[in-house]
Length: 484
Image (cartoon, rainbow, N blue to C red; front, side, top):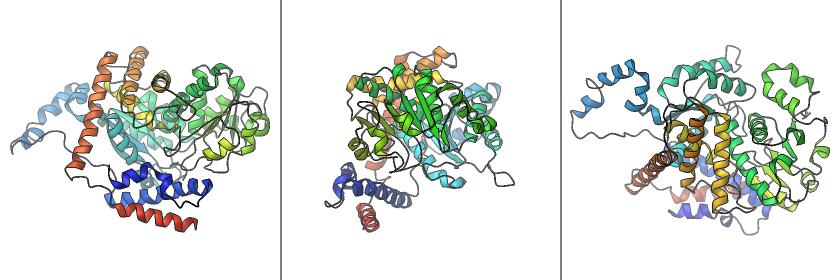
């Protein structure tokens, strides 16, 4: 590992010793943002296209291109499914976004999503052995409004080049319409990672957190702060896995969701939120203070903090409360403050704090499993299977209040997850290819090892240079200046 890599593993140690916890927490966010911008500028992004076949001699150009390749085209013409074997389609994902809800930064314009979409492609390759390409789409109409139908049409038109589609950073309510339409109208899996991916990993973390406090999911009182694509899908998966909707209350920017929210009922675009209004909060609780009193779990995917979740809310929760503060890039309350308020288990969406409940441990394995059995879609049952796969993997190696889910550096978790998801796809009848668990695990493991070995070989061979040490120094100097 390079010097900069070693220092980043001990991030808290690089800041001035006189900084308190609040300054260090804020400093980490500012530092990582600045370093990210410097590093992306230095490398010109973080992914590239590279050949997977050799050129032993000049005439091999005639094999990989014309005239030889015409036989590939006609073979695919006669049987479209051979495209999965005769091209890279079977291991290729389109990461599609209109960039209207990028992290916590809102509408960043179509090209503004490239940093995140390239990041998805990077993680898919390194963690899941899956190739991916970022496609940031301008779906605005003549009035400048983002039209979900344009995004739907785009994906339907380009689906024949890919084995799966990963939707990302699409604002609500368009995200609901886009996902639901494409899941039914495409012949390949269409997955909305902000919604389904986050829900899957959150469920995994909740399963193990409840085990640690000795509370069954069916009896847990859960409060949800934020009613965007992520949290509305989290509710749906938790209910599908045995959570009791009568013990749940969700809040959006206007208050609690319940059957008397006429504003939500009237806007048909928010049909997912209206479903939650009808299922949860039967007592029509209206305030956070009432809902949070005695609650076992708070799951927040809301406005980035650090002051969105109040310490007094946590103090009012049940014994050994569980707090998921998962807004990015800044959690709704920093873990140290949540712990000081009485939280027993705290999870965030960030990898520089314990318990990263982030879709990065979900989508590489889920998509790999779907691709290997050539699934036509990813069902809710497959997402729930992935959640239990992640929870079970962590439990087998040992869980604690500071470690409820696997981390991205546990390489085999993705191959195990892929195999578990593939088996559920076969069970659900959406797999075109039937394989055994061992076969999927072996194939996924081999592809993941190949991707990591290739990345290391490029570094060892000098084709990818180590990060210049001065990048860290520049980022640190800038951060200290910002915080005074």
